[in-house]
Image: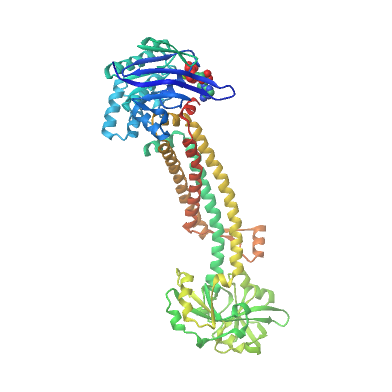
Length: 226
Length: 403
Ligand SMILES: Nc1ncnc2c1ncn2[C@@H]1O[C@H](COP(=O)(O)OP(=O)(O)OP(=O)(O)O)[C@@H](O)[C@H]1O
Ligand SMILES: [Mg+2]
């Protein structure tokens, strides 16, 4: 049995407003090391909200989130930012990258924030870009890359910080099927070869098909988990 | 991080050029405006003070207020050698000045009568350069040089004679008849209307003030600080004397300058306001353009303070660029107009001449003005950048990425 990386208990998120919305309504789940898991469900069911809370980007209304044993709901803002830097890789839906930095620099940047030495940054960035099939494109700016290539750079960046897991919110939403297949293959390989944990929020069947664990969510609740 | 800021400058060339251009324009405009303003006064003060009245004058105590010959001082009461040895003092210039009625028989006018040694005088009263007709009086003669304006008013020409009628020392009557040896154009318009110059000894004799002086002008070395020289001279003078600097001699002039400067200040302040809004606009533009990017950076683990610092650094480089270019661009303009003043013509000229000003616009080349305005614009830019800092510090990554 692998060790748990994320443990969520009774998580709730209410968006206050004229009509309060219970976006996440009592979710408990555990993600263990090496998973390749998809959160699926209809639009508006609370996938993004849940994922953001797992990533420490959003505070839950109640419940707890422990990552590697640390309860992140109690961290101060700066501590949380540093925690994200060291423990969590992010891939967002689109436009993940800093437009003025090259692919290589985008990947190195996160290691620069971690104060890693220059040689290590450069070597690892090159190695990761190669792993996502972008050798020769290191010096291209995001604007000169296709959407699929940009997402692959984002995956490389997410891994660069050596996180405990990678959260990806609709990473394939803006991609054609060729790029989607390509990106999924890469992530699957990284998952198998390096044991990197991936959690997706998606309603893309192509992603769901590849997932080894599928958590269905509806109205902020876990419907099924297999 | 520096690289990131540097690259960001080039990403939106429109915004960057607006920022640089705004800062540049503002610095150039403010500096040109102030340079002319300061330049005109500098020139006028230079003319009045450096050429005609001196930065420092020694009198018998109370003379400057009373303007009475009775408050003259004895030449022998002054330690000339000691004063001339004070660093910064180039020479001491003796004068006897008073008022008299000057008459041709048909026309007459109250005039400023100045007894001097022309060869020892300040440059504006050495008279060799100023003469437009005739010649200089010979020492101790009964000859005078009349200012251009006064000669015109009295309708006198070289060779004519003039009668003087006034009060001498201690109630003696001062009377004399003199021959006009020359006519001089005095640079200061006020003096040019009413000045009569004659040999110092002749004036002393006419006013029954042998061996007496009303004024000793302290002529300074070119770069001497008058306040410093004043401080070193003061102990050399007894309590019977007053040592006045030009600001004490011409308080109205100082006031006029201050009022005029304040007017200019208002204008420049308005300019700064406009520029502040332009700069604020560019910062708002930047923040909204990058909101998503800021969100991503904070999400992946960049501290807000670091992000804010990079953003401010970027603005700082832009501002500095604009300010430096502006300050540099304006330098030749300042130099050009200092030596080639704009000659005013028409109505403007008449209006200005009425106030006894020379109708020319000079600039100053003082670099302090450039630095001041460069710095002010720079500070405004920094203040405006704090909008970006504020936005970043209260940034919510989830919200900003949704945008
Ligand atoms: N900031 C917010 N303020 C108010 N309500 C919100 C906010 N964010 C999300 N919601 C609401 O919470 C619910 C869940 O939203 P969420 O974005 O998590 O859904 P989702 O499953 O990611 O949907 P999609 O598949 O469309 O991305 C929705 O009803 C949404 O309208
Ligand atoms: Mg979503």
